[in-house]
Amino acid sequence: MRSARTCRRLRGVAPAVALAAAAAFAVASPATGAQTATAAGAASKAHWSPALTAEPLPCRSPGRVKPTVVLVHGAWADTSSWNGEVSSLRRAGYVARAIANPLRNLTDDAASVADFLRTVSGPIVLVGHSYGGSVITNAAAGVPNVKALVYVDAAAPDVGETTGGLSGRRSALSADPASLYDMVSYPGAPRGATDLYLKQDVFVRSFASDLPRDTALRLWATQRPASTSAFTTPSKAAAWKTIPSWYFISTGDRIITPSSERFMAHRARSKVTEFPGGSHLTLVSHPDAVTTVIGSAICSVR
Image (cartoon, rainbow, N blue to C red):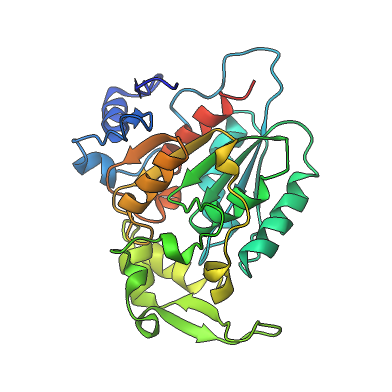
């Protein structure tokens, strides 16, 4: 059994930053549920330093082979959404690769990621954001090098479940599709499938709600569309059943609701970190908060 409660202590930072960071995190085993800090105000709004300042990186175990961190983006994003995490991990001495997710359908997207994983020698920490969580859940199955899974405001389906069915009843995506998406046909699409672009208002208000408006508008303008098939393809595997997992949950997420993520994290027996506030793009607005959780997964690899 994992410990009932593990608090991450931050070292080597200014007292004010350490206080905000300590307020922002509470980690618990699935047996007790995630513990959400009460001092959410300033911590949820403050932008973290671009440099990684929190333990447990670098891991203090000389002679251990360092894992490669592979990061998989979700829908309406691209590899650049991981820029902050990649920078912090590289500064800490780790190889980090943010790879392209085709966003076509879950089966093919997972196969594409799995093919990349098989080119990596040594242990892998596999990280997925949003729909990327569904992709890593399938891609890691049958790839023995994957030693840890990290879900960042992500879906973690069981066999037979779809990503679209895991957003939660109060998700912003539960509205009329015509009010959410600009729908565009694409060559070779399955019957009835279209590419989905989030409408500007939905992207700014619900997808990137904790980012400055100018930044959110830039990300909206450069979003990658996802096929409807990505959200309706049933999952064929559930790698979290056999691979240890970590779950980062932003309590301000309006795309995949925190309650849905807590459910998925509990059944996966994940180590859970709740970040007060944030948005579905906390990986962009607070990359060091996310990197700290990735670091916990890294340091578990033996």
